[in-house]
Length: 317
Ligand code: ADP
Ligand code: MG
Image 1 (cartoon, rainbow, N blue to C red):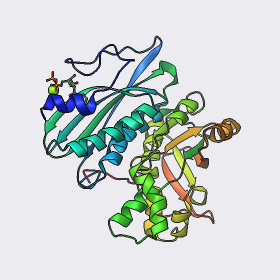
Image 2: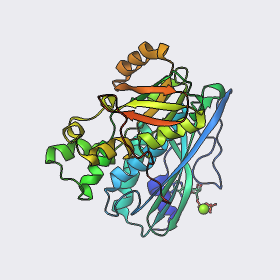
Image 3: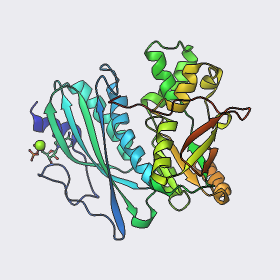
């Protein structure tokens, strides 16, 4: 199979919303009048982001999901993606599964694959995604105000807990593992939530490196501080069952790979956020508030500050 056969067979689908898609030297794209492009890249490297024997269908899903999560955090509508892929060999069964996982999620979100690059090399998957958003409505990290509530979507820590099990750092029951694995392998990007938050949230970020690290980026960009109530953090029953272990606390606060949204909003928007949660069937939980100052304090149930590591995953530390 030649490089071009491979691209044609596994990575070429209809792209009705592109002026020009796969097959020329560049794609041609047009955003709607009044909108700006939101652009983001995420790379998944074998051995760093996934195990070499990872299920290719799930890997296809996750490769796109982590990029969709970034657009969700900006309040952008996802439109197009390009895929740069290095493969050790042209394994047709692997490629069929990978592209099936990728396009299943792409179709769900109306994303068109309009180009990319294909080379031989250690397995490496890099997507650049393009979305659009009215210029004034993009959700930035820098808008949090003193007095705003801090919210998170979904549940925290399940992906990190499942990874800890796979790495032998904790032994979950079969049922516990089955409950946590989808968070690790098939994160659901919160695109619809990002759109709903456009005119409500004052700032937003997606949680890829752990709650405290990513909330920390909002605090730095907004030049404010935060107080979090540990007891309010949304946990799955599996995580709750292990919540007394230091490892569980680490998964919850700095585990990473959650792909939930953390955002801030004025207290007056509480009722609207409850309506959005009900409409989307997605729990939204108020976990604390923005205060003057800098940094984040986490309180335990008695109101005492917890001694927590605020750093998330950092490739170079
Ligand atoms: P060039 O050599 O001009 O950079 P390529 O030969 O790399 O072009 O790619 C040919 C066409 O296939 C281009 O339109 C490119 O965007 C597309 N393409 C290459 N790899 C992929 C991929 N993995 N997924 C989708 N499109 C791809
Ligand atoms: Mg090329």
